[in-house]
Each structure stands twice: as structure tokens, then as C-alpha cells.
Length: 132
Image 1 (cartoon, rainbow, N blue to C red):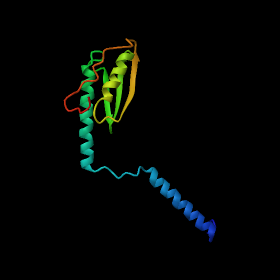
Image 2 (tube, helix red, strand yellow):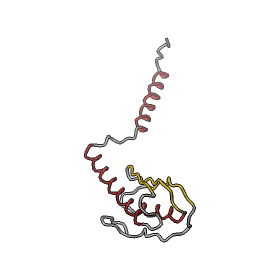
Image 3 (cartoon, rainbow, N blue to C red):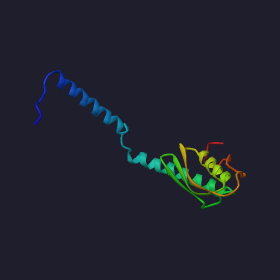
Image 4 (cartoon, rainbow, N blue to C red):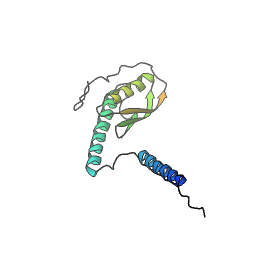
């Protein structure tokens, strides 16, 4: 068993331990838990983002419905699937970025051979979307 130290060394050890515990508390996120009402509101917002991004992608002639799968998590939009050319990939990213509530667009798409430029309809307004 280790001897119990007294005096200034013990005080320094206690201060160091206190600092370590405070640092761990900061790394824990600092946010409180989400209430059920907040969770419900977040899920409603995520569903609205999902529907609009999917509608935008389906309306693009270079992409069409079902080519790109969309996942939304706390405002981050993840795009999965195959883009037929660099132009279509850029078009998918632009459409997702225009949707209200999107914080970040994560490109997880596979680039297939195709045109490097396409006609993208991205800067259009959908019902309920405040962005131009």
C-alpha cells in the first residue's frame, strides 16, 4: 500500500485530480440531454429535409429518382449512391446544399463515367423552402 502524503504534494495531487475531472466533464459534450419534445421536433425537421432533398434529386434529369440515397442526421445530409458523371455529382451536392436546415453535405457517392457538365435545375424554390 502506498503511503498517504501530506502537505504541498498532496494539495498538488488534489488540484491535478480536480483539473482532470473538469476536463473530462468538458469532453462529455457540455450539452444536456435532449427532451422528448426536442427529439420530436428534430425528427420532424429531419424528415422535412429528407423529403425536400429526395424531391430535388428525383426532379433532376441527370440523376432521376432512386439513384441517390439520402440520410439526414442532425442537419447533416449524407448522399449515397452512384452519380453518372462529375456534372451529376456536383448537381446532387448543389441541390442538397440549397435545402433549408442543412448544415453539412457529406458526399459518399461513387463517381461513374459520364458527362462532366450537365444542366442542373438546383437554384429553384420548392414549396416550404425559404432559400432562393
